[in-house]
Length: 327
Ligand code: GYE
Image (cartoon, rainbow, N blue to C red; front, side, top):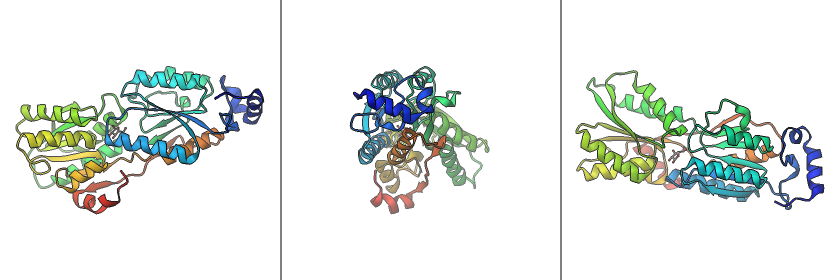
């Protein structure tokens, strides 16, 4: 991170207006380190799920491949840790900061600090609710409302021939996170079109297997008549499967299960008939992120929103694609 004065002057001259608007290192296209490599500070949410593990690997592998110097920090699902990491990246004068915000609210102050230091920020995977969109350059990740809708559409199509009530329990992701808020909304909007669909219980399972199991056990005790489980990710669904089996019921048959992510263990459970439908959410954001990092660093204009392309899987489709899945 030590930089020769001549490098700074040269970089500032090259960067022109870019450098002028930031108070910090503003090294624009000049390269942030002595070895000319771009330095990227990345604050990850944690290691709560199979999705997150695959996402971390994708980011680490693709940084290496792109020759980007990655400073990686794990926030253990805590916003305060992410804020600390971002402040430390600012202090270290990294070239670019990217992070996956654990929750949507409460980022304005630290994002303003990065902006004032002239360090561009890229949001990865999850959104923030800041109204000032100049606080970040771009946001790459999935459309979580769309994912929720896909889950709802599948369910509605399963029950076209009956008017009987369909009792649904929902395992939500991390409270206040974009995927939890949006997957709930997308699903809720679709099933609201028919009053026979009833969400009889909905609680957070924090995107983890352990919590998914614990909350599903409580759901099963309180509600003898559950038809469907909608879990905001595979891991919570997998935990819930253990709870359902523990209660002497057959997951996928007695209780239909819909999840989101399509990580390996989820796809295996789908192929085995224990999950009925998975909406894909790709964790392989690394290559696209590094591409954006290089463009932003070079001062090029980037799209403000980059949406990941995704699909859905039935049990038959899971069997077909499982052997070639990367994660
Ligand atoms: O679905 C879940 C993870 O933000 C899309 O976070 C991500 C979500 C993913 O813990 O498994």
